[in-house]
Length: 124
Image (cartoon, rainbow, N blue to C red; front, side, top):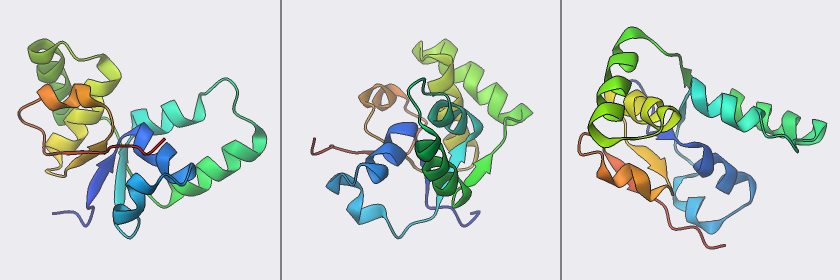
């Protein structure tokens, strides 16, 4: 493996910031993220400068996986097979390609059979 315990979906990282207890069991793990996750986190319209600094700091502790040919091919397969939105297909493909579980609260990922999924239940 590559030393990464989980690929974190956008919502998993937001739950860390919100101090949601659903992420407590995972806080000592190493997270990877898709380039899409970084783009989603930093493109919220209401993001303040302070929020951006906090997010960038959190992102700096994650290993970012860029979009490559193999991830692109898996994303195409996921989107065609399961009708997944393109950003979610890229996140799922990143986890599949790197053989790392995806951690998320998005139940839509449950339909992707090729995915090793850790489904969170947020407390708020």
